[in-house]
Amino acid sequence: MQQGPHIVVIGGGTGLSVLLRGLKEYTSNITAIVSVGDDGGSSGRIREQFDMVPVGDVRNCIVALSDREDLMEQIFDYRFERGEGLDGHSLGNLLLVAMSYLTGSFHDAVSDINEVLQIRGRVLPVSDVPITLKAILDDDTEIVGESCVSQADRPIVRLTIEPEDVQPPDEALEAIASAEAIVLGPGSLFTSIIPNLLVDGIVEAILQSKAMKFYVCNVMTQAGETDNFTAEDHLFSMLEHGRKGIVDYIIVNNHETLDRDILQRYAEEGAIPVKYHKDKLEQLETKVIEADLLNEQHVLRHDSARLAETIMDQMYSQNGFWNTLGWKRNYKLVKKKNYKAKKMADKKRKLSGRK
Image: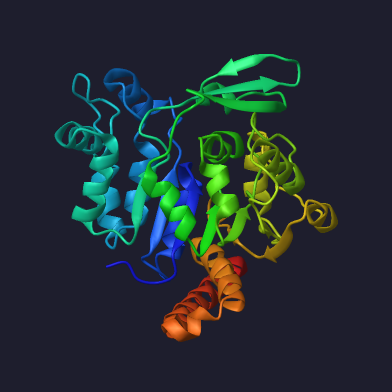
């Protein structure tokens, strides 16, 4: 039985998994709507060989929502290193393919796996058919495929998908309609988030929903895809492809003291921290939530617990139903747990800095 406030998250890639990992501590009433445009790696091979939607992002979300995430990650992410046709495939991807044939559709396969594994929420592909990304660059060049779009190396002016009339599953639209919060991102702007907005009915459903609507801006730019983008650039591109009104709040990272060695490594790969200007974001009719969201261990990405807490804090402050439905106690217990974990992490960081 799903319990807690209903939160819909929309996106793809590793960013979505990071968010789900934190949110599941507060609620099991989560619906993850996942992009299906991937055309690289194991997912790309499966897409081509079996003419089905890419499965990798869906697999990652299932793992992230699992109660035994460490064990599920070992099983689902296990990759075969040899064997004709198996080399490079993950066990989780192959399981999803097999279930698709057993049930007759990828959608039913994912639904059954959600139920069998009893994950904290459910995962839905944004479409039952694979989509192909097409981007027009600022020099009018057209590039095709997610792998190419992610390495555009020139500003992307417009993104489209094929088929243009692809339909989302009814459950996705119903989830958006009944949601108490909708979260877009974090994740690759043009390859994980915007493609979902181009699927028929998704933007309209978000606009009609009474949910609080969040956009989680990335911590770092992505080389070839969002070179030198500010938070305003991210938000503007998303509104251009969607519509004004799909975002009430933008969540930006205000952690400024970054590890120089890590920054240097990112710079060598063409990535820099995403900067923001609060006044310009507000001009886009969006409220700005500034928070220290960074997990700075080996890579610069959102910290699952801090990001989820920032969203839940905003929901808690705006919605009186929390008190009447009894979620206040669970909310405070998780916050207390996160506070202790943060204090411990800060202590370890200080000790390591002295050595």
